Length: 362
Image (tube, rainbow, N blue to C red; front, side, top):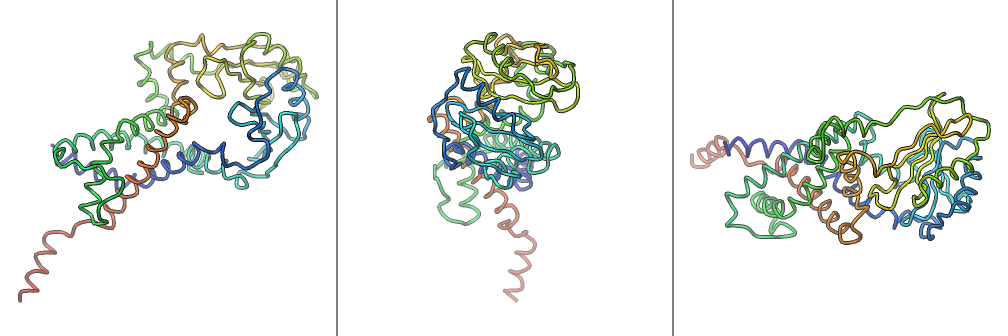
């Protein structure tokens, strides 16, 4: 049984290790994106009062082709204006454009994010990442089980003693068991965001699965065609009236005729950085079609909404960010070394070694 587990563990690492390594590296880089974007105004303090946000919204949404806004927050002091086909712009909280791009390839933070979430392949890439996550889960659990047999030889090293296969395997085994709890958190929360059935299984202890699934499905609303000049001032005012303590997070125009204008907000008790408190406005009249209070969702849905903040270090401050950095770098090292030793440092077959010994003695 242990031999079979060892074989499966090695093949899992050899086949999926590189994907996990790249996800670990890109995820670690994204933990600090707010520090290296390099556009003036990223460190500006948040001005979340209704008058300032409304004035900026009216000004930015009047830009031809604008499809929505990701509002500034306490960590990142610029609004992000979204256009079609990956185009966008950063703008100050007063509505002045600070930087603009025609595609995501002009902004490193955008294409690194796309790689980490989609492998540059859209939904197909998400499937690959999800499968890699499940393999990574098996990889961590089986690795801990296999380590138990050799626990007496444990030696913690940040780097292999030598770049030989035995030294790398020993380092891989001992480092892996130390970071296993962090890797499990990173892998489980990441996979939850891709595979809904897996996520429902993880949050099942918090409430009935059917109730959670229903709460996670966004409600559908039907409205009229979008007005020539939507009244964003009235919409934001109504949103603030309903949720006076919430921050404005994402404004999105309809994707097709009849869809509503959507506004996401974040209440103080929510962990999710962009919140799940939502309002839907009729695109023709600006009237409220519906609103959802994220703090009144089913307990399982609220637990699910905590996965991304934990995964991306949006909670826990610098302490948690440093721990996730250790997790990401460890995944990068373990995955890359697993691939290298499996494909390029494999032991020679016994028959071949015996044949060479016979020839040498002849």
